[in-house]
Amino acid sequence: MQSESLTQRSVVAHSEWRVRAWFREPVTLTVGLAVGGLLTVFVLLPILQVITYPSIQDYFHLSENSRWVRATSNTFRMVLLSTCTSTVVGFLYAMAISRPDFPGRGFFRLMAVLPLFSPPFTIGFSYLLMFGRFGVITHGLFGLEASILGWWSLWVVQTLSNFPYAALAIERALATTPPTLEAAARDLGGGWLAVFRTITLPLARPAVAGAALLVATYVLADFANPLIIGGDFPLLATEAWYRIDGWGDLRGATLLAATLLPPATLLFIGERYWVSRRTYAVIGGRGSSLDRPPLPGLLQWSLLAFCGLVAGLILSLYFGVVAGAFTRTWGVDWTPTLNQWYVALTKADHIRNSLVFAATAGLFATVLATVAAYLVDQRAFPAGRVLDALCVLPAAVPGVFFGIGYLLVFNRPGVPLAGTALVLILAFTFHNLPFSYQIARAGLAQIHPNMADAAADLGAFRFRILWDVHLRLIFPACVAAWTTAFVNGVTNLSIAVFLVAGGNQVATFSILGLIGDNRLEAASAVTTALLAATLLVVAAAWRFSRGARVIPGVLSG
Image (cartoon, rainbow, N blue to C red; front, top):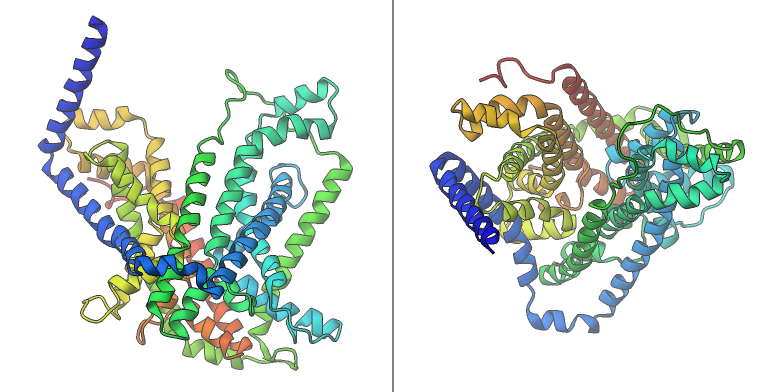
């Protein structure tokens, strides 16, 4: 009893000391309140606005709307189908690229990463070019002119678009499985199938489950591919856009978007739960220098053929986009021409806007994420858990929902932000904040607390420690956070489609308009230009982070 009383008094004393410490650093407290205020206004307020905009009666009468019932059924059907196939394809692909001795491993990994750097509709658009009514394969090789629009094509496109998320997530789990476990199982007489069933699969199961939930989240929020390739197959995300664009029904669009939030939130919570279980303590003590046993010959050749098929399909689709940019009339006149690039030049300001808006949003997101992550990591703010929850909350919100929320709150008459580029930049910033925040948290977690304690003992306040100590060490992580936010901003359509204005057009919205006008060649040229510009910026950022871990004179006190 006495020890329990002492422990309780110690906890209370520590809490009182921490509260006094918070108020002894008014700058830190002020910055924390400012970050919390920004998150409340630009994250929580749009979400609440979308939820509360429809009346209670609107929610009660949803089931009477046959169009909503059909869109809901189609949405969950596509989530189930696409998640299963994306996860299976991703798992098989990960089994191959996780092996250091797998032939062509670097090339296949590059093919898995490539779709992540292109606009979200690139796969769907290029699938239309290759397999559509006048596609290279369907019409050019087989003389067919059948329409491919519908759920079958959407299923294929969503599988190809989302399997990289599963492959890269599962690859990390498979690559960290100790080779000694496989070697021990083989020494005990286990065949490859037994090793896979008893060692590989159980250890990778949390990663597979987490990857499946992550893919399901992306499929649920997919807006661009259904818009291009879905045809008369309504989904909740596309129906919300049609309500505004076709009928001017903002309340109906808000109601449809609001129904996306509960399943998206459940998937997000489930994914975070499974991710937290990914790390298994498989072996303690001294590491091993054993090489991973090679795959059986038949299995390796089978995986090589499978990866070659997937990579070849991805390459053919990107070839279609690039080839379309130099074709006079797709499917009719294959004469090479540069005429389509004249259209790309007329859209150069839209490409520039995409790059500038995404770069600015990436900078804002990185700075805000780093400061918020530092406050939470150092427990320097009283409401650290609330701050942490608000930082990751946008990850559970589909882009369509977020875009409509900003449309309701900031892009209406009487609001100073309405019709400006800033509202689009802010939407990109806060929607991509969770990715930058998680990267910053991971970087800060690798820094030993003694380094900050030593600086504090010398009299440095918290943000001087962040500036002089932590930023020097997490600078590559900051560049990675900026790169992630930049790519997501450049390729975004689900938010941009609701917030673009006459003078603030972005490339993804222009490409969508060109596809809608059946100007596929011009759309190919603009897509190719945007993809090339994005890859160049990402390559420059990667070189910058590799060559300059610390910026002299900028990160020095």
